[in-house]
Length: 413
Ligand SMILES: Cc1cc2nc3c(=O)[nH]c(=O)nc-3n(C[C@H](O)[C@H](O)[C@H](O)COP(=O)(O)OP(=O)(O)OC[C@H]3O[C@@H](n4cnc5c(N)ncnc54)[C@H](O)[C@@H]3O)c2cc1C
Image 1 (cartoon, rainbow, N blue to C red):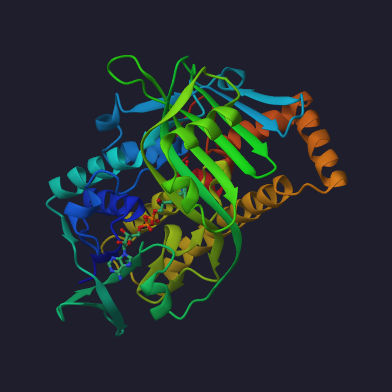
Image 2: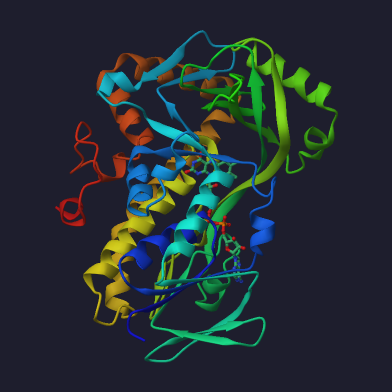
């Protein structure tokens, strides 16, 4: 029982954690409410994710990075534009001697690779189409109660069950945050000219319009991933409208940057909010990823911060393998290690979102001046580039040129 772990939630976070813990020799059961036939179907998740340098290392450790070769595109430069301002803030990974800030991967490809990895590990049981109804606790174990009425007893239960986490409710942990009353419209787009590895974030009055570099199709067609944020919780008109209408709006906003552009495939809509849980742990239970914190996608950091949770928790559990991993003191180490990074990322993305959603003239002038200043101050530019690479959280010990996630011991120094 001591080394048995139940993970509720088999999304990108839960699957990555299952792979890391299974690889470390723990006896893991990963339970997901969604049937595999649904989560593996085309159009289930039309998003792409910007995987930072730090997260790539977690993906390598989880044994999936190699299988994504050919399905990922490097982000080499980032252009930030504000309204119709002439100042463009440009970040180039060459300035910090890095090959890329990160990579864009298709969520469906990533999930497929993770499922294959988890199912190849003898130490992991992957249950899909199975919903957790409740969790109860004793001094020695947690009992996971499934909808079917069956129980699974484990030494530690981990909630990777997303924003509406049942484990968080069972632990009686509340959340704070806000509804941004914005919706992100996402899809892949094809265009005439190559993107040359450039990510573009254009802060417009209606919300940020981001084009992220994606892989070319085998016939050479150029592709990017669109994340277009609009005000209001209902983006249905943009999802349901005729492709010609959508393409016209797309081309108006992209302003010919890559020539004519058109939508390729299904469009998805995601209402945006900030939700941060007050605590992450209780005896025999711990929350990770979106069960613990959900943020605005403006900086593409949600999964990246979740992967830092996952790497930290896996490190701590490995260190205590053989002893009681559900012990409150062990889990508290995780909470104290992760709390500040998660809190500062939540505040940073919230601040950015509020700053760039504000058209009050003094605020917009201040914002433009700020962008101009960052573009001229090399230390400020470097700071933002390190954040984009996902190494900022480990800044004290990070060796950017070495490009390795520092060890836990180094992170604590
Ligand atoms: C538009 C958009 C763009 C984004 N872009 C980026 C980006 O570029 N970079 C980045 O780092 N992040 C990005 N993010 C954030 C990232 O997509 C999320 O953080 C990530 O997908 C959440 O993964 P998760 O596994 O924590 O949660 P989820 O994907 O919500 O998974 C939770 C899982 O738990 C299961 N579950 C729930 N309840 C139960 C239950 N009772 N029993 C069993 N199973 C249960 C569900 O079936 C689900 O599979 C973006 C988000 C959005 C909305």
